[in-house]
Amino acid sequence: MIETMRKRIALITIIMIIPVLLSAVPSLPYPIDTVISYHCLSDYQKNIVDTIYESLSDCDFMVEFDEAVPEAELDIAIENIMFDYPELFYIDYEYELYYTDDDTMITDISFNPTMSTDEIRVYSMLLFRKAEDILSMIPVNISDYEKELWLHDYLAILIDYSTETETDYTPQGALLR
Image (tube, rainbow, N blue to C red; front, side, top):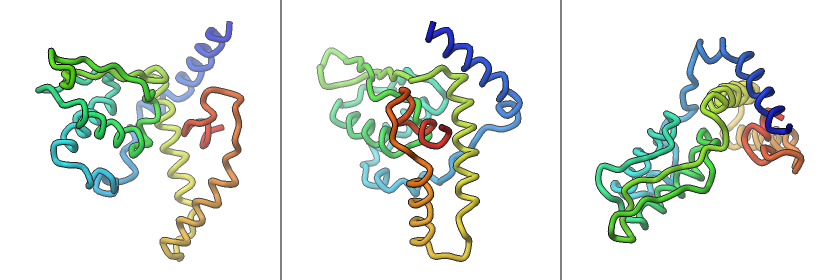
């Protein structure tokens, strides 16, 4: 019964947002060179991150590497992906690794999305628009520090802690609910 209700809500949401989806696809609100931890990675790890990011951004949750990747290097890349790319909010922290004959070399990785591809597109659009709305409210003639403080204070007022739904601790729970 609950699952049927969730599907109906998702379908209604999708129908209401289809014109928005057809009109534009959100672009990143920041250039990749602003992700500080990315610059701390080795070139090899950056290539792994880039491969995974490109796949996940296209809602392709099965990532196949051209050549097997050491598990230790993959772990570092995945940590970077999970913590530094909020636009990938729909990726679950659980994933499945596919090994070569060597137990330390990975050929493929399969991620678990927390929602359907259509829901990902809808919520991504809504979240980017909400973020743009919030950023547009920041006063212009203040220092970068004051902008950060303003944003901190705004979010502290906007967001309440809750455990009512499974999305409470996600970007859509924080910004859209």
